[in-house]
Image: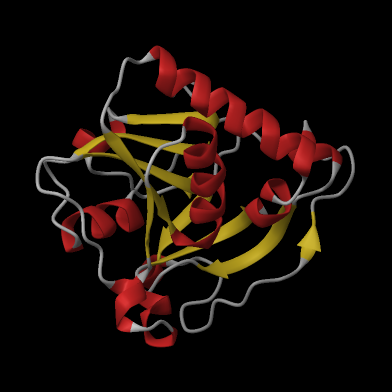
Length: 203
């Protein structure tokens, strides 16, 4: 409701990664910077973590918005916090901000803002050798597409909302523009429905 009412779906052609391009995106930073909504998201995730019986874990934020969310969750849980700098941002961070040090047997709870292909999550896990450490992944939005892999991570993922599907293409098969994918800042028109219900279970 918050996304629809505030027109936080950006309609346009987005270069998502070097491999994928997409139509439409959710302005997750706007969601996180809205105090009332942020508190509801944090409380829902904290409640689920507490009810899951996890102990002796560290909260790890992935990307900027995921880290903002993770910091609030870690503070509420009084749990240790770290963050994973995405590859595209590493050139503007000092080495001490990039190197992630987690004890070998420490459990890790990953927090991110949105998941579509699991590529970012998978990359963060593999580059930091967390394959045996991640016990669960929390995200605000889980957006189904035809290009999702990583079944082992799907099974560990919990989302606040999964009702917004996404139109995703491999770049070489893009039906809109094969050489340039430029984001348009047009917003979803009021009353226009662009969502499909997903079968992914929400918590």
